[in-house]
Image 1: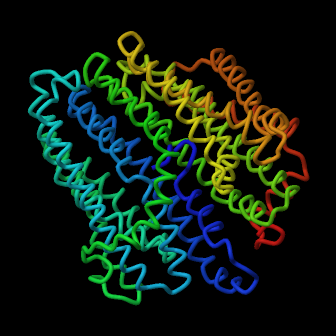
Image 2 (image 1 turned 90 degrees about the vertical axis):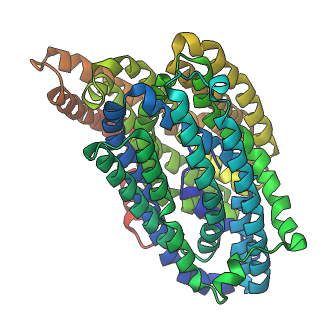
Image 3 (image 1 turned 180 degrees about the vertical axis):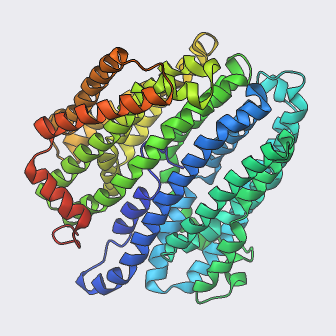
Length: 541
């Protein structure tokens, strides 16, 4: 339910594991050791699943847009956005359920797990039915809700019918995933997710090869997303109780309320983040010129999400150590870990972001064609926004671990309320750019709140030093390498296309690398990085 720019997949799971057993002592080290391989395996598979999913979208979107047309593919983008936004009906229960299931699993409280699990089936079943009814109601009011053409209305209705069917099953499957996550089966869950991503990719290729209608493609795509569910249910055999004891619907209010009370606090904290992130495309669908703008949104979003996916690889290694340092209460170690994590994340993502910005025109030309060249400005702005937001992930993750999240609710609410009207006001003139500018405003406000309040007051860190010495040097180097690369490429006898992309990337890499080794990365940093990434945990756990 988290805004992905702030809470990357896998990272939050690792942070959560470090804090959900506050009474752990040295006697639990043997148990933790047994879990280490599973957690590490789950993290690696989570990274792979995320990257494959991003790459699958990156490859298939231009094919699908070319086959179905920009406007009709916009209907699918609209469906994805609707489905994502309605996940707020989870009420934060997913986070709370995994936390408590994990605690009860460690304590062997199987009866309690069974009661809450069966209650969760009732809870998610009710949410699924409510979600389905909402989709059915929306199917009747497509023309009033969104800027649809007469020919798109029947397609929109059929898509809403399909969503209303699939949403119930999807919600119910959340219980199985929560149970498996609590049992350290994230590796298995993520392996199945990889299979689902491959199926999604195969469905897109088959749709084009066999010339399926838009609705036929959407049906098969939906089925491919439901395919992992039987595997999740089968894996529940790792619990010392029958599947019927875990999944047969039965309400146990007193046991369920314990999780719900905690989850509602998480829900309030994430509501505004989710709204700011997922309501923007829906506002575009209402106030911009037709659903075609949602295809533009989906294209640049997919490219930007590649940065999030690859960035997660680096963060996955460094963040757990920072979280453990916080659990130990070692302020000096916290400062070093947060500083190093921020610096290396900024270097890595700075390279990715500025390479994409440097080649934005050619990438869009090769990726989608001349008709989408105008998106390069908005793509570049979105990429810079992602860089700004993701450099703060180590700090944001530690803030969550402190439990002092009340101010985060206030800051998210203010940023959301200020940024969403921007999308509405400028949707007619800037089109997809209105959503990008709105997102930038939201992130600037959020990051500002972190540097003004959370970093100095809660984490007791020097925000000015963190920004100017961990984030800004890599960003300045990326901007410098971009300018040099763009200037040199213009002097080369290259007409454009792949040759320009390759030449620009090589020049940028050389300039950026020289800058980093001259001004940012020292010999001690290289030794520290090798120890962190390749060591066996000595001094790092």
